[in-house]
Image (cartoon, rainbow, N blue to C red; front, side, top):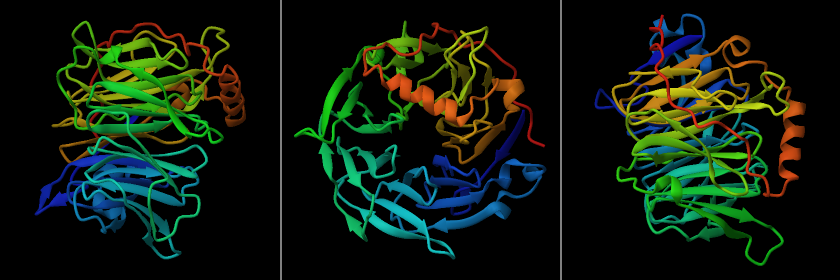
Length: 390
């Protein structure tokens, strides 16, 4: 495994500005970042190869996207890789597309009345979800967007700021996380009179939580059976809670971060089971306010790796490459740290895409009755710090 550290990807008046969100393009060629300088930026992922760490990161910058008027808080790629969504404190969500020469703003989505904190694409890229400190989750029809668009649905169920949204891999469920100490799971039925309805209100993992995080970035396992949520707590310890689909109860508590967890991000790849297990394994990364990143697998009670003191500030976001060999972390201190794994040696045998798709189909044939992956209740173990960048 190699580690790449980069500083000052975003700057204000010559000083490092926070990197609030990152996203790797589906083809692995581009890294999108955004931050406190009101910009979204596109970088070549040559940042994370060879001797890239020895060269100024500016040499890998492809374009700065400069249409937002305030801090840019979130970026997300459509699965086809042709569109990038960005959300901002200016209340807008922009859709960017490449016109053959450069990336340009194609669509402005307006409807939120306060800061946008997260965006997430649906499974078929036809819908986009966004959330805001106006306490609302908005659903946008982006299959054929014009220059501007208003929301298709405004989902009102939270009593406080909504800080994270995530679709399940088939688009059947949308999860939203709020400062009201709940996660709502919205079931989508395009044929129902009300297309989105609350299927579950999850509160138990957040009982007793007093500290709040800037973002609550949650995600689903690629097999759709589990939902990873940040800023949870167990026995007065900060945790990331893994919830089983259907019953929406905790099946694992990833314990050990010294301060609240800000982001839980599953790798898009599935891996073959260990010791004859038929079920494939998922891999998940966790980042927290303790400037620590941990990586876990559903087959083991302890983390595969713990990277301590990566940053001088809280971890703001995590992003995996589609094949699961690259993990990038961003921080409020204005830097990123990337970990390139030797997949077979570090993570295990990757499941072919066709097998992973078949397993996803089988998982959802359960129709919400199963409790999801059965994971142990692990405790975060100490591990060596990451190697210094070359």
